[in-house]
Amino acid sequence: MVKVAIVCENGLEECEALIAYDLFKRAGYDVKLISANQDLIIKSKHDLKFYCDITLKDLELEDLDCLYLPGGPAVESLIENQKLLKIIVDANNKNILIAAICAAPNILAKLKLVNNYEFSCFPTCDTYATANDEDINIKNNIFTAKALGKTFDFALKIIENLSGLDSALKVKNSIYY
Image 1 (spheres, rainbow, N blue to C red):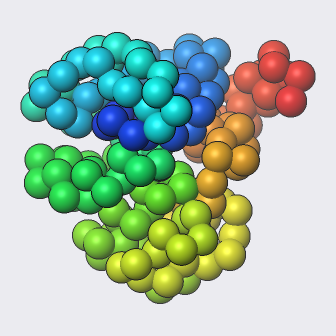
Image 2: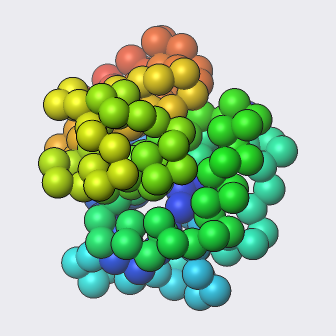
């Protein structure tokens, strides 16, 4: 079974996390919400509270197929979270698919996992390298997307990569997208 970890922090863009969560579950994936702090309750950018499954310290990369990073103001603290930065580097070294949307690709730029024009992100959130203007960008195991409006396409592209086009089309058709 495909395993996906969605990293959550206070201030995250909830739809970028929860739409992807929903589509991954529809694909039959084992999806876990991972709190990047010590608390399992996360409060989103728009004050939605939800429970995470585990904290970052309990995340095991061994069986993980995808590490998903939603954006939003949460990225300001995620980009300084040394535990998360180490996990991202380790995931990249193990060739685990790393997906980042909106402001989150800036974390990958800080780690130099993407260079100028090799990634997409929300305009003005590319402080460590210059993003391109594409909605979705794929570079090896690094998937990046511009913003919330691309979450459906982004999650479907991830499903296609992890499980094939038929699986992605099945999920897409199940939601009448």
